[in-house]
Length: 142
Image (cartoon, rainbow, N blue to C red; front, top):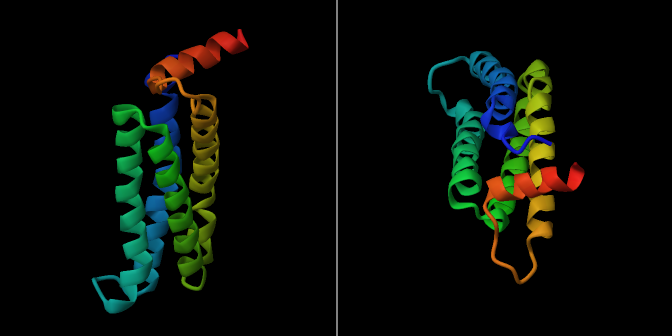
């Protein structure tokens, strides 16, 4: 496993591949609810905006602060927000919900990876940086 995987394009590519359909899905919901800033848009698009903000916080926690436990908690919260968003969008636009599936797949993978890294480093040793963890995982595989 290449320990530079996240810095060489895989991570940004996957983020764009999963967030682009989500952005279009939010447009479909916005359009089907009449556009503008009407009251019916508050919950479905409020959940969308909240999970976008939480998504960026997770990036800062994982890549900046290297706090795996807090990152995992935020990922679980994000997963719940996206599921709630899908439930609130279901009655508005079915296609919008289907467009969330790549993002949910990405969250599943990311949460699984964060959990594995957290479990591997939950001993009494100090936490390693995410870069060092990825490198050590690559050495174990080789």
